[in-house]
Length: 234
Image (cartoon, rainbow, N blue to C red; front, side, top):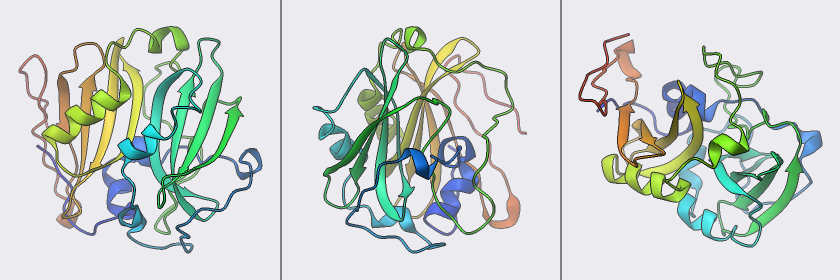
């Protein structure tokens, strides 16, 4: 299992799980004003450790706000407050964003999002974490029809990931990789190691578990494939 060892918090997570944690920032002019219970100073370190509510607990309070299928959840900083952001995809293709306070677990704001490429920003002072995210492949955006084919729920995928990599779930996203629906789950361990777990959204089995060592620049690669084949080193 590949893990990232070193400083706990946002910096470590961003370095190890760029695709999950450092996506395009949610434009502030599209976010209704709100005030959360955990204020985060600009460039603050270890912000993710401040959350007093788990991702699963935050998801539970969105039950009356859900419009469609949960396809993404992320712990991050928005407008200076630590929140969980949830993305619900309706059959029509419309996205509904729900922000939940990471301190007291209350729903802060719910709003429609027309641009489905926007995502919650995880703020960090080291490096530019904004801008259009490109993951190096040409996979089209996930459609509502594709998402509906998932037989495993977002919450079940998180449970599976945490069983394999104990810690705090800080991000999860349903995506299509070469025609296969996968939940990418980001887990922050108690020692600060960041692990990415890919869960097959059809079978519920773990496809790959990986991360990246920060100290010394070394990379470990012992990804576990469903078919038993190991990934080669990058």
